Length: 183
Image (cartoon, rainbow, N blue to C red; front, side, top):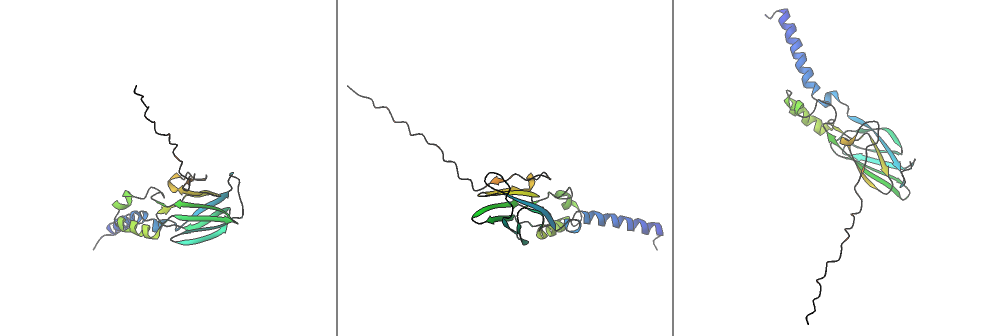
């Protein structure tokens, strides 16, 4: 029969292993939602209030009027699509979902933990390991893309325009060969 100190040591060791295993899983330690701020501005960068916004990803749909501060969206591996309208004025965007940006306990560290690959698969399918930019500003007449890896916290994430017309390449007329007169 095991002695009392051996039992205590076993319990402490098993508790430590359990803490390591559960620490690698965002499903257990993370939050299924994320707070996102959405603002809208006009063509000149002036804020517009009251635009009707529709946001959606694979986990849900969200509606509200801009500005939308403190909107809780469910995390997902799919991008967050956003469209705000007021009359015929439209501001659109896409927040790119990124994995592994939620702290140090991700990636290879998770894979090395007992059961880590299984927990990472669970986190992928539930969306818990993904994050969106925390603050986006949509601009009337533009389609913008916001990347979570550009999020610095406390400031709007810079958007990249995805609908910009391609600049036409100025072409110079081909040089004509000089005519040589023969006499």
